[in-house]
Image (cartoon, rainbow, N blue to C red; front, side, top):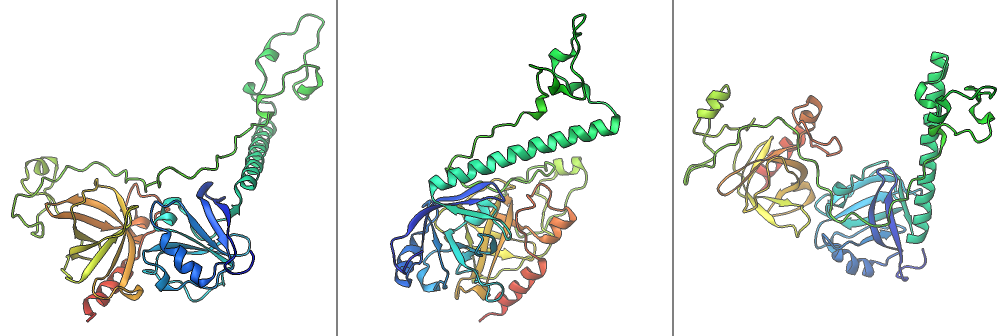
Length: 378
């Protein structure tokens, strides 16, 4: 890529595995440390730009003012591992040494679904167009071949071709004295219409444009639940309620059903950050448990919205006192919202219906360990 500090080149980053662009404005180069100290703080949410650091020699935590996402690549452009919200999340110190790293604004990894093992393409825009055209052509040929193999397999099993394989004009009776083309060799007749499945399909290449908006995680498709009434002024949400049994009991109940599965405790110094595309802001946490938390905020997201949150020690923020996870908005109160962690146990057992399997969860043991550490921290 040239000498350190040389003028960077502009490329596009495309995830071939996910078939989507990560960024179309990527400055690639062997950046000197002084240049990185200037460029990395510019990777704010919504900026639309990224950096491809080739080769990768490390990133100082002091050069990052706001959390950024890092995608580590090998020589072939395959994703080795990813780091969300650096430097809140630390870079792994073991494993295969990366050849390069893609530095992106926060939330880019989640919004594009980029994960370990994905194949990335990084080329200038004109070359990227040619590559995508080649990929589209190869995909169309493969689909046509698969269709032909499926048709051939059906013929071998039944001993004759399916009726819908023959063109409509060949289904008519041939005039007297004129031979009908053989079904075993439809191309033997001059001017015969070929089977519709054999024509290769031209697929237009994807446009070299990034998504206009980060694609949010899909909302859960769980069965509808009766809406919980808003609490009366001065009525604490922390009080315990019995869940009414039956639809009639829920209809006549004056208090909302309590969805918590674990008791929550207050930790005054615990803070939470939401990564929703804007500037990360620390919010206070009223109480927290291994299953969820209640955040004091004026934001009111729709129930079922999936958010990426980072919990940290507000007195001494550091990677060993932080936890990044996904959480589902469960309810709204007078002073904030109640969230439930996306736990791997719930994903495996089916207790989180409607959640995209690509949304990473967190182990319950990780949450318990983090809470014990944050409670005992001085």
